Image 1: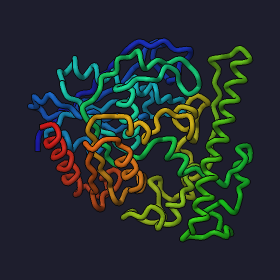
Image 2: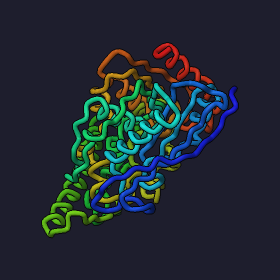
Image 3: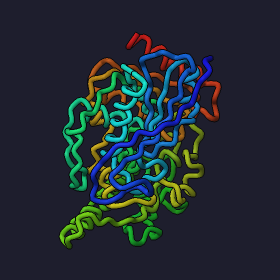
Image 4: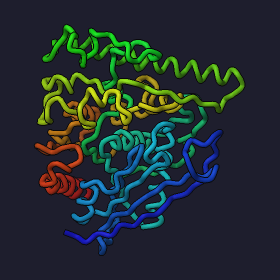
Length: 384
């Protein structure tokens, strides 16, 4: 096991924007916080680059374990580290692209593999989609943001590690459809409230209830999207094109998977979610999209508006892909891994299960060697 060195550093670049969308820093400058975790004596020209829309993963067990196994790793925290209330996915792509360019010049890396862990999986796919065939010139809110002009460097491969299909699709599968009026979020439809003991549909749910529940989840997402679009249109019509509005989304952890273990079955502990007790997390302060803004909703949470679709991005990329599913994961369930694997539109892809592994490898650190070996074997067989 190699001795590793941790090297924090910053990538700073200029960007014109109509308004600041991060808490600190000088206007017109973007600060991307990075950390290189590498074997002390490594001369490898290949690096695994992890990123996540809200960052914060440079000390993840898998990140450290890969570095100790001899793989140089860089973790990239986009500008929104720790706060996704104003997050724009297109800007996360730009930040990742700036970090990849810097990695090539600063350290001389010639081959880059994206490590798409959790929400970083769909970011990795979105990034490579736009690096291979750039098409986006505006955000979903209609603001000019030209990815086609950024010369995003393509990566050589992507590892999707305990990844979900996208932030928007995951939120939609978790959002509480019993909330039918955002202005009255605690007046809930008992027939759709899976935490209401008086609900006539009880687990194990029949197919008809699940279909109705899923359709109502999509409908709620679309209602919020329509409201966000109308609010933005009203602001622009009033001569305030850069104005924003913040809002709260209640009820974002109500998935039938958490109350019925027969849904998307796996080795996960039943009746739990990655935030703990699902009923408590549903209205707790740290749920997905709990605090958000108009533009951010359209970019990262809107079912029909996001460009970071995960599955759609996967269908358009050409680089090799490894998909690893942790079978006891409380956040990213097996159907997500399978859908990602099936969405990749070529045959240079592999799928592997790590039996019994949790989302973070914190509960089962004994399974880290298997995960690292799976990644190492794939890198060796695919790239030499």
